[in-house]
Length: 183
Image 1 (cartoon, rainbow, N blue to C red):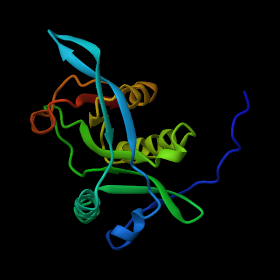
Image 2 (cartoon, rainbow, N blue to C red; image 1 turned 90 degrees about the horizontal axis):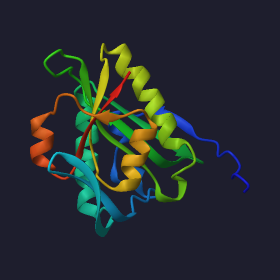
Image 3 (cartoon, rainbow, N blue to C red; image 1 turned 90 degrees about the vertical axis):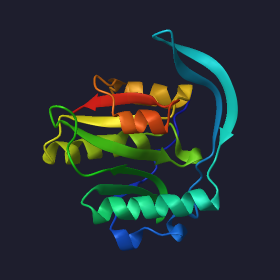
Image 4 (cartoon, rainbow, N blue to C red; image 1 turned 45 degrees about the vertical axis):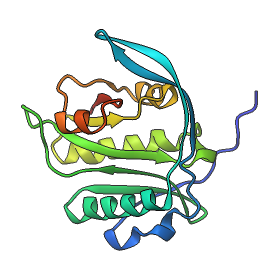
């Protein structure tokens, strides 16, 4: 099987003024989900839960305000661009937390539907891990979508179930998997 040619991707640390609705005009969040991970009686199991996850204009507007806030408060928003168009992004919130003050919150990592599986997400994670280490973190905390494909990605990135749950995340998104990624 032939592998697609390597797509030239430019990674850029975004500033608050860079983040607007127009930035996402060529970004396709759509994800078809068939199986999700659920913790049942203390064991992780895959269960059918078919749906299509996509963002509305209101979701994008909320995302813009969240990402702008991340930058304004000292966090990181990193964009992956192909031909000047945003095709992936990640964000890390500022401020160490946890009983040992060792976590930083990886609040988002998304790759446009047409570029998934081509290494963009892997490179975004690699770069945010470097940034988080420089901030004094030992682990990234991720409240991650429970879709089987999403969980497979995080597992491939070295993520495991979080030793210490951030209860604000767990309560806000009870079906998310609470993960950590050692740095």
